Length: 416
Image (tube, rainbow, N blue to C red; front, side):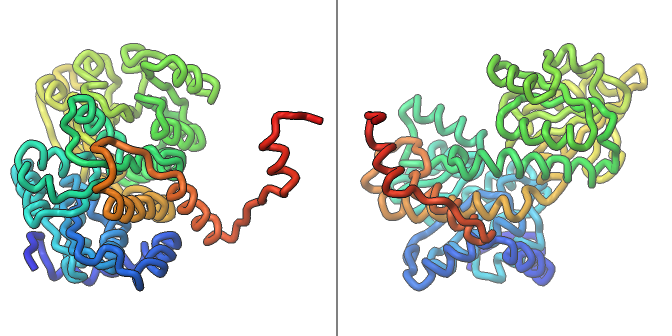
């Protein structure tokens, strides 16, 4: 089996991490038990570009258990864990990734992951799809479909669709109820602060936390910041989200207004240069900046570097930029996903839902992809609901059912 990782001898520690995660993933466990005897992915070549950590490894091992030949690349150089890569290779998954890879190595690994001619793709950030469209068009006819995990990837795919170049049907896992209501709000809400606190060892209570973007991820992080005792400021473009932020107990202002008063800045927009030169120029001494968007573009790192007269590593995953007047600005995890660059990502129980959706979406496009249009589509409602029902059942939670009288009432327009 072809692979390219840092050190295969790290596999035992990787297996230990994966086994721990697997204990708390009842939905993936249930789906594996249901589908493994059927081998629905037998003969399928599956390429994945995901964050290579323990929870992702559980998904990739299930893909393989269901019959797929699996190749995987890490979707972020700092979230790739070398012991997990080694354990995956040990489990028969061909991995092309290592922690800290540079841009050239990253793109080379993407090409290796696609080189065997995938049937199905599981993407996070749309890098595999973009690589096919730009560099490896000859492989596109073999692909039945794909799934996309994150908001930033969906943005790219929508742009492809609008330009008429989306190459095959793609399911937006990111937009499923089971994903954005829970993964984005509760997963990001907890994991961003986990990454922040384990990296900085800083107090959150009493600080001014600036949240850029009040989508589901921003909501979750703001909710947790308030619970930790912070004063939360939100910056937004959308008037409805801004008003929701106010109604949730936050202050809302522009980034220009927030920059001089913030202690901690976190970005959740998916857009470029949300925090930039004019904001750095007025920030407090020792302000801390982190990004929770998929790409490291939300904080203008080049402008920060240009302003600085000195750069040094204050702690692992913290780079301090000293400005001419002596003020220091601290950047977490190179401006990459702070919850994964500085932590282990979302809680296991949350990723159990998201990866169950990825698994079901892969099965769906494998079976139906040839009959679907080359469009970005929602997770089929029956899949979204089934995943949540299995999750509730695993927690011992039962749902009410409509009585026949209630069904009849809801189906009739008369009130007599």
